[in-house]
Image 1 (cartoon, helix red, strand yellow):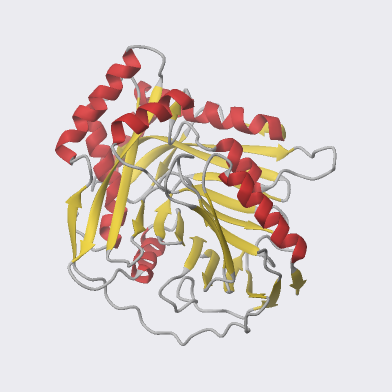
Image 2 (cartoon, rainbow, N blue to C red):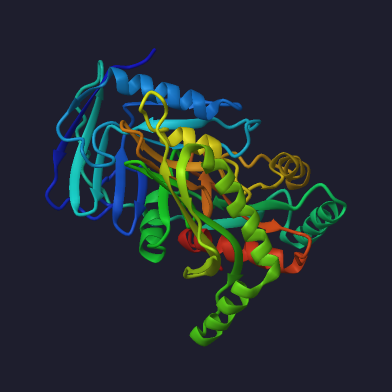
Length: 418
C-alpha cells in the first residue's frame, strides 16, 4: 500500500559535522567534501528486482511525491521529499534494489543547512535519539572470496583470450574478499568517518548496509544540467611525489589505459545523447589523484532536452539509460555481461550498481558503487569488492595489483592489515 507522507523542511543553524549529525547505528549517508545528506530511520522503503527495477522505482517515487504533503522550503536540490537508493549491477541478481525515505535528514549543500522530517500516515513524529559514541570496530579476519588472489591472473588471462578471439573489446571483472568479525558487530559509523576524512574527493555513502567511497559519478542531474564522471585506466600511487608525477604521466600516455578509457567515455556519450540538446566532451582525459590510486578521468556535461510535455527526464530515467556503462561492464555490454557471469563466480549484488539520491524535482546524484563493502544483515560480515577493465593488451599480474590497490580504502576503513 502506498503511504501518504508529510515532509517538513526547516533551516538548521550549524548542525554537527556530517555524518556525526545522525547518532544511530544504521545511518543513511551521501557526502562529498562536507556537502550532502545524513539520514536516520525509515519512513518507508521500496524494493524491486529484475530488468525493470529502475522504471519500477521511478514510478513508485513519482507516486509517493504526488501524494506527499510538503511543508517548508523546497527550492534547493535535496530539500523536501528525498530518497536514497542502491540498485543491483545485474537485472538477474537475487538481491533487491531499494529506495529508502529516511525519517529525518540533516543536509548541507552550498552553504545552506536544513533538516527534513518525513512522517507517514500512522507514524508519530520522529524524535532523534541521543548521540551514543560508536564502539570501536571489532577485530576482523579476512578470507578470500570465490576466486583467491593467487588465481585471479588466470581468470584475467581467460578474459584476454576471449577478447583476442573476437566479438569482445573490453570486459570489467571483479573479485571479492570477506571480512568477518571475530566477535561483535561492524558499526558503519567509524567506517564512514574514516572515509569522509581520508577520501574527501569521493562520494561517501551508506545505504541499506552498502558502505563505501566511490570516485566515479554515474550522473548528477541538477536543474536541467547532467554531468557524468568517467573513470577507467588506473595506476597505484607510491610514497614519492616525484615518482607519482612520473606515474601520472605514464598513465596519460598508456595506450592500453587510453583504449580502456575511450570505451567507457563512448558508452556514456551514446547513452546520454538521446536525452540532451548538447554534450561537452573533453578531447583527452585528465588524471584524477586519489590517496591510493590515480585514474584517467573525463567529465561529460550536457544540457537536458525537454519532452513534448515540457518535463525534463528524471534522474532515475538517466540512471537506467547509463547503467551499465563500459566502466563497470564492458564493450559490447551484452557480451561483456555474459563473460562476467561466466568468469566471476558470484552475484555482484549491488557492487558496481548505481547508488545515490533523488528529490521531488528530479534532481539527484548517483555514483557507481565502487570501493565499497556490503554488510551482512546482522553486520557480522563485510564483503569487499574491487575490479578492473580488461582489454587485449592487459597484463594479468598488473590487473591483480590493481584490485589490491582498489581494496585498500575499505581495508583501511575496516582496520584490516593493508
